[in-house]
Figure: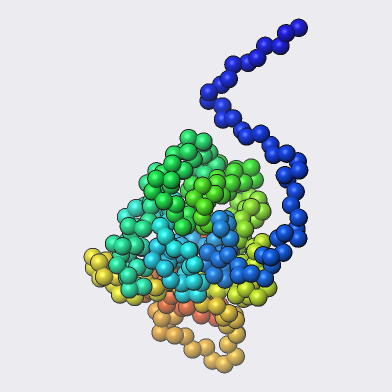
Length: 346
């Protein structure tokens, strides 16, 4: 019986032949020269490697997106991320954003740039904002080839930022299969760009990453903030070593200081910093003395429950002052959070 040869399908990508088995093995002795040499940092002390996948997980409206905005600006213009982690590879940033929109994203970038004493226009020119964002778990070969061609012609970015994960995936965040597909899609963007990928995600009510537990298996670095008024971020990751600052179990807070304000937002500034190593505040042992800000917040909450955004607007208070006031009131047992609202304890 004669076997017929099937015609070649031009739409099928022809994979290269596998390497000979003899070429698959290396001697570990050849790699010992790398031991003890300087580590390959993207952001020194926190993000290591040529193209790692990092996940930053925190509560809604807690400064997570501001922290990513600060990372974008530090990458474009140089400097320290969050005032602590020197960015060692600068250049343009590919920003895949599916929550705030182009106007708000640009406004935040400009505020952070001014807070660093930079020209906002120069920073914005270094950001490649994706208007029609990808569904990470449904990327196809054509999209990836187009992106590779674009990078070949215009230069590779130094960083890829995706904010948030749930807005850029087609499937269900509670499905392990869908989550792993989305994270692999994010990693594929990083491989094509030859750059780190940092993805924002939210927490559930218990303070863990919302959705499938598979979220914890794929990233090289996971920064997780507790679900509180002033989240404390700690890290786990394959490349974290005991002496790294990020390995400090106390973690850090993200403080967002909205400094100057103006009606048309043309001079406003924002400074985003990490505050390391603060131990939890001790319980009060003497008479309770509330700060002036805490007194104002408590008075407002006694009139009825409000979100942090409503409180900030009503009291014209910045995010840092609001967080400290709520921390003090919560430690004293005078207020509590319920979902995204705060209420006075009667």
